[in-house]
Length: 51
Image (cartoon, rainbow, N blue to C red; front, side, top):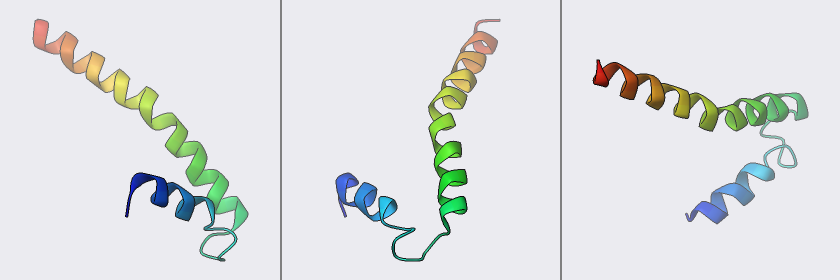
């Protein structure tokens, strides 16, 4: 499955009763934070490698 197809499938999870709306919102909020957390970890790792 392509990334686009995965996104479409994810968006339809509540419609297909795979997740409740509350579960979907909770997971979506967590996923939105991942880039920030990942970048923070990369920065921390890079800083620790310099010392």
